[in-house]
Length: 398
Image (cartoon, rainbow, N blue to C red):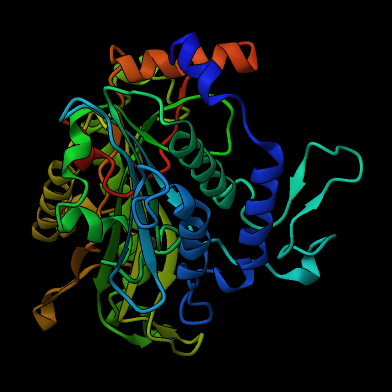
């Protein structure tokens, strides 16, 4: 928690300045929607507003100590790193994750214009517009904090760093946002001090997130006419039974962990299907192949790489023992056709964007300071954890 002298020097939030900046950011939000190929965001629009807000107290103009740097890995899609230098090398407090893209919004489904900042008619302290809580409000808030530090110039031992990022809302395109910054080593020095990821709409501290493993389970059988089911290997039946067996083994090997209660996780680790796909065909055709896709949300007390290896082992074992491992459905349902020397087969694959979960250090000064501040402002503190996933947080933890 900041000392009374520092809090008095920095002061409270400049409401008018915050609202003015946020109004500019929300005004750009139609061009910040991230859902390619329909929507390709232009985060540079927000990045430029941030740079402009800080320019007068930056080293660029000589008007202040802030070191402001834009980093781009794609045209029109910038990240911004802002540093208020401290007096002791290696001591750092950082605020990361304020992303400058938003999820799409269909104006016809809103009661007000999502792409402009307005006040709620019944609550003048409530701001409305796409991105107010996810995450343009956070962008404006941290930009105002950095600006105030540049104006007041308090003598701090710790450097204070803010990292505003591109491309958080979509993972189909990579290397543009925080992943590019981490790859280039631009965030390595943040590991020496408390790091706060600023991307939550909740008033309470989030102290844990889940890992995420996207998976695809493909079943290959034998296509045949549904009137001659005894000559087919029904890939859908085989895939459903295989997934049931795989889930059973997953929950046996990765049960609820005792630390999940300590961190107040809303759920334990889960594996579930979320999508079906197959090549297509008529209702009178038993499909020869199909794919079930889904994800695993893994509490941070388990290793994502270990889970991936175990799932591969499950599938290999099932393939070797189809006849005895998987239940069939009806008198002619089967996954092996001995007379044709034909066996059904399962394949599991994983997308490249596997994310690791993180459990914050509950003994750290940063956590204690955040709890104290939350209690002071909100009136109570109730840390929580969820198995939602954030990119590269674990990699920034020492």
